[in-house]
Image (cartoon, rainbow, N blue to C red; front, side):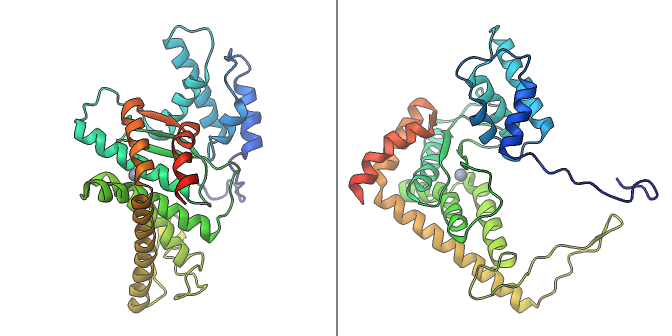
Length: 292
Ligand code: ZN
């Protein structure tokens, strides 16, 4: 809150970058005994967007998990679990899923992972899991190798395609739609809208800003003053729709073409529940090198 007469300047403290996060982690783990498998560089890489307070919370949570096991040292697993808890909410291992739900989730997440692996501009896969967390029945996590401050059009399109991968797999394998894709659809729509309205990445609408940010003045939001016509709004909707439709078609085509790889991934998920990026590589690579 800004009180008049108090400060006339706002100082924005940016979130720490990868080096900053490593340095902050170093400070917080000073009095925490770590197992040898803990790699703080990997942790720093896996926590983009974390503030100093988030990182302190991460170390605390990890130490608590180790304490609960009555262990003397904090392991890589403790850190992973703590991070996932902060990012995604607690695991809900007790939640009873029907076999049908588990199977659908496995194919859905395998779909995301397969597309992420096949597309050249997609970030490396960190983990795929069908252990329910928070509101999600499963998760496919990707980690950028560097902090990113911008994205190319190719990366954004591949991102939309990866988001479409879950539903594409469900449609190709089971030929039905579930609600599992709702957050994926939101994500894909958000990226596509930004591409069109803020980043000028559509030929049809050109490099014009069509965003609808309301002016915030003295704490009051003066509404979403739209500065373009209904006709333009309809064109924006059509272009956004076209971008997503194209990526959905591409995702389905890839799933059909690499269906064997998808099956292997989904079965592995049903058996192990969680796969690391390296596991996914190992399982899929034979299909990619021979298939294309
Ligand atoms: Zn999904």
